[in-house]
Image 1 (cartoon, rainbow, N blue to C red):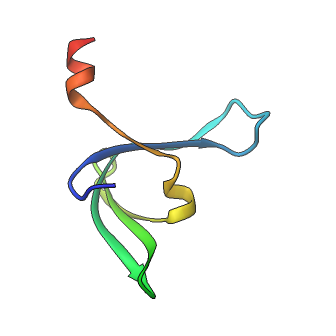
Image 2: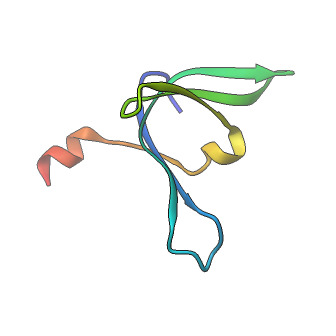
Length: 73
């Protein structure tokens, strides 16, 4: 993950669920380290206008938003 990049973070609560949870557009603003390992990712929620602190386990669901691909489709 790269600071300044945009991400969409979506997940379901179980393999049988069709309900998606998460955020549509987050900008990574900081990575917090604990004992030389990534502890939490701090994002700015572009849509809601608030900071979100996400664990590395939850951050594995985040996918980078590639604006160039979206503009050409």
